[in-house]
Image (cartoon, rainbow, N blue to C red; front, side):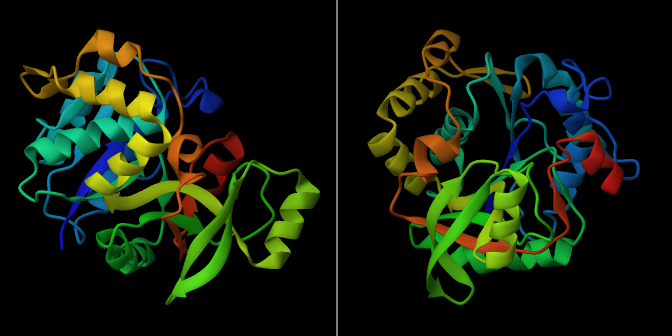
Length: 282
């Protein structure tokens, strides 16, 4: 089964200022080798998907994204432009609605990734995604929990629940970034994973849960996608409709409340490069 990669490239990377700036944030920078973080994110999907990636970005970055896609021989006509930032829950909803309208597969598996993460072990990454496939195909909302290597206060955590399959767990809870003592307890317990912000689910599974749990976001995104204006390489949604959309993360809007969340552990040398110290560690 193939995947439809959905790459979220709308962040500002403000914690890495002045290297990462408003008009040239970190996902468009090179921190490993010659390719940008966005390009590396797409390149590591080679063994997973034959689908062209959908990239979601701010309108001001549209030409930068298009050029970076062309540099790695990827089609640049799947770029969804956000007129304003509304966080990850609406961004993913836009991609899901567009996927159901346009995909060859009537209800594709969306592999949702941030454009600004580093993954050093691509074999382990690929294995975890393949392992998650059966759960996502059967209606689960899968998130990938990074097996912690130390007590870390810079990440949110996911506490695993009951074992539901081979190295797959129900999600017991999402927890905010802890203090150092609490992070130490999490690390020692072996039951907590770093929240990677990576997901795998069917487009319909996500939208059904969003409609039930966050109907205002669902309705605003549905209307915004209902008035698409094609613009060369870009997909322009209805600005006024999207501006009315509440701003919320996928964790708060959906994942913390759904009864269908599954966490798959991953040990792949992952970092969200969210600080100067994490950049130094790469």
